[in-house]
Amino acid sequence: MNYFGSPDKLLSVAEFKKLHLGANRFKLDHVTRHRHIEKVGFHIVTTELIEGLAPLIEGEKIVEVMAGSGFLSACLQKKGVKIEASDNHTWWAENQGRDYLWKHTLYTDVVRKDCAEAVKGADTVIMCWPYMDNNCVRVLDAMKPGAVLLHQGEPPGGCTGVEDFWDTTGCEVIEELEAVHLQFPGLYDRWMRWRKP
Image (cartoon, rainbow, N blue to C red; front, side, top):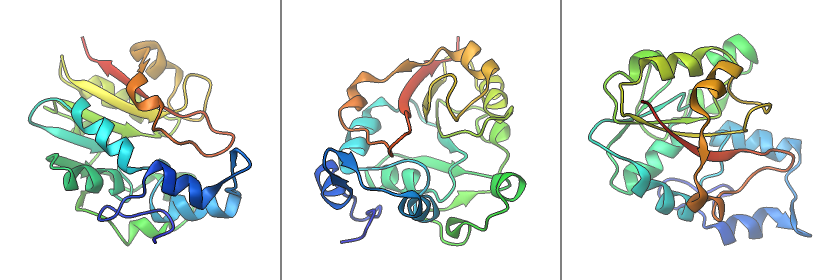
């Protein structure tokens, strides 16, 4: 079994927990989390998460911005969702100086495009773990009225987004995903939803 799963064979919540859960907490140390980020991304994607997320997607044009490896988009594509993954892949060079593996091994076509340009005309935008810079606000500004943002990250005061992003969205937690959403220890990310007025 693949350590973190793959778009072709996702792990279930139970399988992921069996591999990584002991004594009622994740046994993921810094090295394991780093390996997960290198191979997949910041999000933990399970069969149940994709089953719960797919029905929340609306409209014809679906875009994931800041998609990294494209893992989440690839999983949704396997479920039949027509989604475009996009990322300009400048974040790591600018902020971490690391050469992450997914820059070289992508799970689906990841279009090199600026995040604000990518969301123009989109009905649903998915954005996971946006960095704490103005790009997440640029995404909101570029979204069309009525478009839906499905966002995964930590709430205000956490390690994603900026104050202007949270002031604008006031994202509501997607309760139906709470039971199937897994987190790394010490992180408080959640799936949230916002509709642009």
